[in-house]
Length: 555
Image 1 (cartoon, one colour):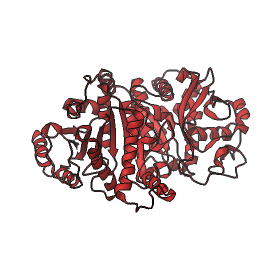
Image 2 (image 1 turned 45 degrees about the vertical axis):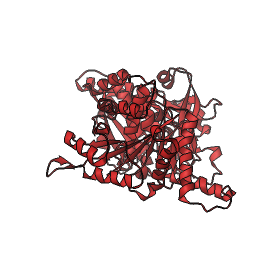
Image 3 (image 1 turned 30 degrees about the vertical axis):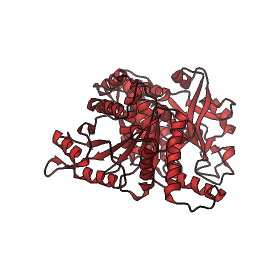
Image 4 (image 1 turned 120 degrees about the horizontal axis):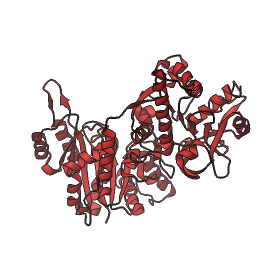
């Protein structure tokens, strides 16, 4: 029978439930168990697809086209599995389903209530993951913090699951934070005690407590938490902040958490976890390496979580290429005002990620111009590809009015236009081109060299596409369309021919990058950035270099 591990959070939000769940998932998978994941989000939006990145951070897209919470990115990167539509459930989605059933008359005229109707739907979603995946373990994380009024139906559903399937098949993990009081120079356990008391008041007794802290946790604190929270001392797990996220599985393994879970859930036929490859990866990450400076030019750079997968994918590629990636966050809106250009000094590569809306677009276009003219490696993701094409049309073809109809519906040269199947849509939520689609690569291109394959599949999230009316003229001018949909209708990858590496993808490669297996496009981009760095340093030391590289240094 499938076992369920439920993760709740206490004391503060963003305490690290998602990373903790992902890390434990990695350990259990390393023991030979199959693992499935789910995130329960208490907000009333049906999904985060229409939410501002400032509100929610990154929207992570699954293979089957679900717009989900960024924690699913952690699950995929750590456990190396693909999440799905079933992996993210919100209050809005639950209520929408229950109300739809009520309108159809499925409840035979009964009064619809939170208990049992809403909680039954939540449980149906949880059990659906188990039935569909046939996994040994289903990891379920509840968003928010214990005590939040909006999370109460989810907590009640979790309590009922234990009644349904039994204690031997369920495990409650409570992740809390131990605040550090600077004046007395000590960690405090009292907030954790209150958090557990709140959890117990709604009928859930934690089996494991993960005590998060930014400082070393004394043994007496572990004893105190075990005593006052009525949890076995062995099940109180200290979790000091790690230097890298990917070190967390190893830290948890050292505490014996996975052994306790296997014992507590009576999991049979499990192996000792083989973490040799993961340990080797961490050693590589922590090894002293040269730094490389990569600029991320975005609209939401004040909140780095808005580009979580982009940031992590850059780190993955940097590690494989023996570099520590130093990210320079550049606000595209400031570039339009003449600010922030000093940050371009010393850049060895530029990434322009996705986004929506007109704000900051001209700044992104100018960043693409700078990268093209100065021969600095450039990787454009979704909107990043589109602004690269717009800039090329303006500067090389002389179409000064070139734009996207997303930003200027009256442009005489709509290089980017709304997809044909998007014109008559009334709803914005969940209606973009979402999920994995195939793409054929053109032989002899940088994209083909990066992938070493003829056909690929990548995840999308967009409404606008390259306007094929300009394909011939832009190819003649030096833009190579190196990736196309199998029917040849959609441009998936574009690259500048006369450039060390200026590649843009209509899809989001960052979603498929893994810490021990960086995405090919990020890897190719990073290799080009390393070569640019070497060329730049050689020039600075007085050696002769190509004219175009000299121009890059001067600019």
